[in-house]
Length: 161
Image (cartoon, rainbow, N blue to C red; front, side, top):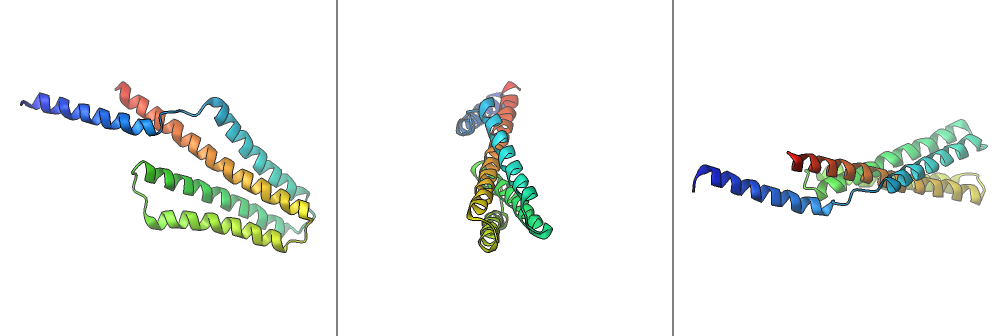
């Protein structure tokens, strides 16, 4: 067997491996789903912020709730990235993975404790909780869509070469 045959055989094996990997993420999200995810994220975050703007609470309380929202958004994006990296066999340290989950849980707990102790109507507490959860879920969907599109576009470029 000569060198050329060996190289061709390895290239074929590599292409089959790439094809197998692509099947896990071969469905590019539709533009409608991408747009819906961004819209829901915008609605959740803007609603939460409008609620804070109109709330009759001290500025430091508003700052607390706003910071919890930002902390939660960053945390869930970090969890989604770490989970996806593990699925794609990209090295993720257990420390980072654990911290991502920990910070997500802490952000939710901070909101729950803040709302539990807040002097707000029950409907206001529910509004903040629902817009917070909506924002977190939408952030995960946006991150997933962004990652799926990048993965598929990258594989399409690889196949064309």
